[in-house]
Length: 235
Ligand code: OAD
Image 1 (cartoon, rainbow, N blue to C red):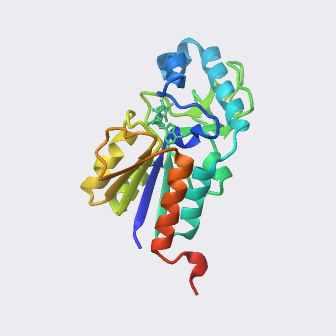
Image 2: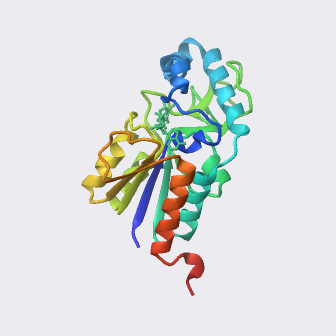
């Protein structure tokens, strides 16, 4: 059995009611990302940045995992090989669906990070510029990777891409690097590549399945698991 590396983006959470970034009505059509998703934006107007992420946190708290998240959790559980799940999403819907060991390369809404000393702690529901770091009393920020910052766990991700037999990108526009480069990296390492999206992103994939994630992923996972005996059915 081979190793499957899955990369998810905002499209997988769209049917859970969480908006994407670049689709019609996406977040980046309503907000200036340089104001709310960069270290410079936080420095200039921390109140605006906290309001933006407080709203994201409130939305995510009310959202439920959909059939696509659940299908991927089933793949992780029942596939005989390894399934590495990397997400650009900052919600916890993969975990809600039962996935474990999810690599949140862009951070998580549930985390707080000290802009001064780097301490991490669970984010309160609402953060303000006055929210103090419990370690040094410094400036608390959401534990989100902003533009210009290095995504998390890159070493582990590149190790996984080196091992991948199949790389699958789900619901991501492929516009933000380094994630957008994973398909080329995996292909160069000999992996087959598959995109699942409402419409093709234009990335260099071997195969593309189009349609809403909840339907297409559930069908794809069924097909993957029927190709090989699942863990549940092994003696
Ligand atoms: P985007 O908003 O750029 O792209 C969302 C993708 O999901 C598009 O390609 C849509 O076609 C697709 N999509 C929408 N609804 C779908 C559905 N129901 N089923 C399947 N696909 C669907 O979001 P990302 O690619 O995730 O980073 O954005 C990448 C990063 O840019 C985010 O992690 C975020 C953002 O700025 C940071 O904030 C650091």
